[in-house]
Image 1: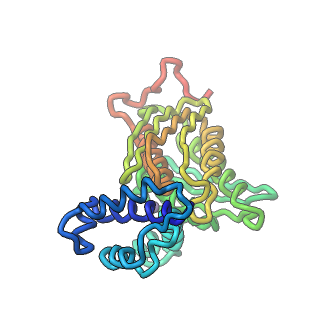
Image 2 (image 1 turned 180 degrees about the vertical axis):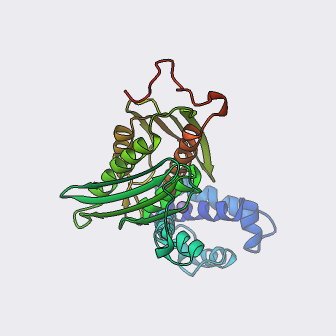
Image 3 (image 1 turned 120 degrees about the horizontal axis):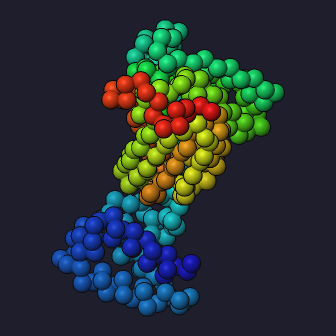
Length: 314
Ligand SMILES: [Mn+2]
């Protein structure tokens, strides 16, 4: 990119930030947008010309000052700024692990207990890669405690608990010195096992659940069937490969593990969104809500099996 092209790109950023070319002109002390629109046209026509000098320094300074930018802002490449800001936001989020909710609600983490009445399960799963313990109560209030070493996953698991009204206690010692892969996948597997166990015969439940959840620009849809058959349709085109330190590929591993061991049919569609954190969060919130709908008792079902086959476990 030559200097003229860089200046044009930055001028367009300033126009976007100000709201319009006329607004930018006013902020920089012009009566109207005429001279800036002339400048814009000149930059556009000179784009390929290597000898073109871009915006002259005195005018550049006027634009920078008018928009509260530092001197020299127009000469720098700002195309990565949005990406950097998003990474900073994700890093901020990782500083506030989900378990903080418990600390504030219950005074101290040691007070945390999950009721064993109702549809409760406790599952431990130990391999050479991970040692996992999960307690889960489907008839809970949405309280959760996590100790997994993967803060962003905990932030997502917290969405399942909160929006599914499922009480959840998950500890995992995993081989994080390699990467998060085994930890995330195996938590999915173990959570699937705990769900299956807590659901029991499934008599009297709704069986099907669905939810749409938006978060600002992002929108996801999750539809599930506690069918007794594993099946995953996974449709999320993440706009970034990493959310903070978290590799977004691992969400697919998580849901595969969960589906295969809970024996549910699960359709996940992220319908839109450009912030990867929002994309993930809408999926997990929608999953929590859909799960809540599916596991809830349907009074009119009156304890009957929600299947003409008579069973949802074989
Ligand atoms: Mn978040």
